[in-house]
Image (tube, rainbow, N blue to C red):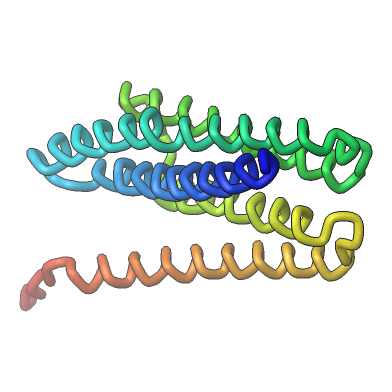
Length: 191
């Protein structure tokens, strides 16, 4: 019975953690783009995003990470033989990268709060895709375990990354065109 409790709360922790990670970096995008706004909107937006980022990181994202990790330890304690499996070693390596990403986001949060970040909204959009790729790889490993079709998985992950890059670049071009359309036109002077 303990296995099912650990598993249920492991899933809950994962959902909370990833929801927080996805939204946190989206807030970083808006925070960085607030720099382009005129005053007083710029200051008001940056202060509001800073409050939202801090609360999200400390009250939702970080607790979600801890629940996920603690419940994973509980799961492993109910089936210690799983520690011999290669798929779990790979999964734990990916989770370690994800934890590193989590704390890197915490570092970026502090840089944004001090107004020391030079990241653009576009760069944050790209950073926001990292947990998506890690999530896909972790879930595939958890589902397929030892029977993971490696070549199909690699092709799927590469296709996913290419699609993300294309989407981010397409959106950047669209945003730039929209900004150009919204610029006031300057009347031509006659000679």
